[in-house]
Length: 418
View 1 (cartoon, rainbow, N blue to C red):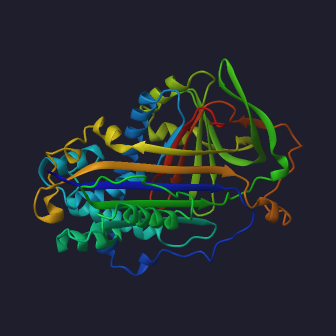
View 2: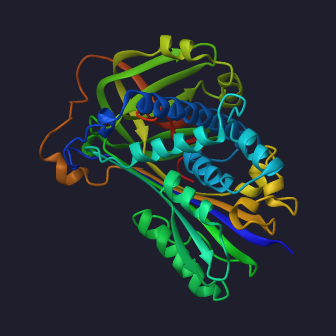
View 3: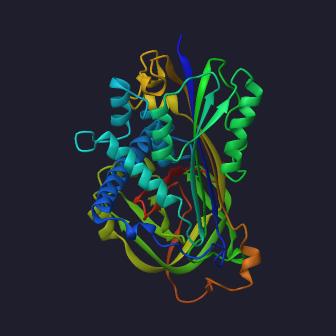
């Protein structure tokens, strides 16, 4: 009988609209002292990872959109990629190739070592503090205290993924659950409290990745300008939402090929929230057409414009059963008796029985009241008539980090009150 691995991926996205600068001093990239060759190799490795992560982001998005046509959803493609790439350190043969192909790594161009070095560089960049932005990713291996894990797997997990190894007694299920859930709660700043509610008695290893993001808008919204407004879920359903409003200059454009208005709302710390707002009733068509839009078309459409921007406040909690979703994308062996994870223990007695991805998202003005007195980033709503970009119907969104050129989070909101 196979012994079991749980992969647990959690993300807490606290999308906080705050005035002022609450971070420490800006931290320059420490890599400028590195040798040029080493720096070039690292840059190329990171580029490969970023490109693969974006492809996987689109791939999983379109699968979820088709599988859950009427639902809100969001996820961290980066969190999922990190956890499975860490797991792939111990994967062999078809199990390894399915993970690599499923996560869009072109192994004819990118070696295994380059993939792991790319994540090593990415996690190094993420860990550097930035003013006004908190972005943390942590990895942990909870290992049964009777399981003999190969030194190479543990060393590589630590070297490339900064993963700590934590001894766990899985025979004491309640204590093991508490140990894992406490780790997750701590590393998501208390936002995800119960990632796991049960453990299979055959479990010997749990791999956890957490991502926590807290951002301050580059130009804050004024809480006093938030008004209750209509959000058109579909032709027959209108709900009331608190709508935040701000006049300012934003990168925006209309992409006729997909019938969408796009607006880039920047955070401090080289990160943006990108909102994609399809024409009313055209969400499905827009999602389909998005797959074929070139980067050049996208960039050509986006221009800085003075607009009145209206964004709904919303919060949501999401849990994905990644076994089901990834099997649909062709990643099957790792979840079956055919799994070859012999790079973890030296034999092929391990398989993944459960892969959980849990996420919370909060978009509000928390913290703005205290900071509002400074008057930073506020503009009066009255004045010359501007183009009104109002997000009052189903939309897509992405949180994109320019330092690593990839999506931290992506999703779709059909109804912000659910």
